[in-house]
Length: 392
Ligand SMILES: *Cc1c(COP(=O)(O)O)cnc(C)c1O
Image (cartoon, rainbow, N blue to C red; front, side, top):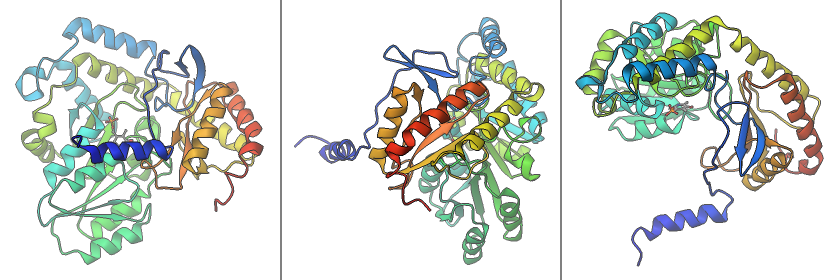
């Protein structure tokens, strides 16, 4: 019998259920186009919401950072890998987001692992939104704490769970903007419940930072609250990569001393920190966030004249409801024939029967790009009418 035959059987099952995934090589620079097998598409699946990944000033900062500091950091941050650009970036983040302290990680995935694994132990309670990102769900399950989920965006469901628990260490975790649905969490009511129930609040604002609120300060700024712990990634609206955790000075000392994803991982290249710094400057000083908002409004308005249903979202993430995984794949491939790259999101990323197209809009799209996408979707509406049936 082959080793791990049970695992490979799982893979075969994915293939049989239209759930198999394959990497597609993109030959275009990050931005409004996607190039695959010598075909060019308009890219409506990118998280580079402001078009900063290929912005000349961000590229220049990366190049200059590499010239000054080398292309790699040469070590973990507590050994020799923490260079001046890292310190400058942290200072800039704390000023921008009005946070006491922050640490840098190589990815949001690692940051979420670190936060939950360092804080939570036996007898503790973590309660998170049912639709939280896999990195948060997995992190919670890998601790000895009691891990619960509350109904999506329903503060009452959260309150009930906290009321039932006698745990003294309580952590509540929500996203700012949900990655597959695009809707915003009711952060202010959640924060109020946390205060009543003596729980800490952690917000993962991977999709809110850089795009929401004054100067792109994110979902917590919009809700006018300060979470005990804020995680944000640099690989989405900021267009680069890496992540931060921020909170009190003591909490960051705890993470710096006990957070294994921080201690035992090579620091991000200083050049990358330079690029993130340049991206933040652009978020704060240009009208890129406003351009994105205009594109979102245009898209939503035009889509109202079609028979498609969008999930309720004001963010750059505009999910188009489909239902069946195989239908989502077929629609995605029809759009490809029209020159649009829009990924189908299927289980297990979303629950069974809730497959969708995750359309993402960016400030790099032109008004005409949006108009053309909606036209193509209109053309396909009659063909896919049946599939779109049964929602709501
Ligand atoms: C993308 C994402 C992450 C992971 O961040 P990376 O930097 O890509 O590892 C974590 N949480 C949410 C909500 C995300 O969307």
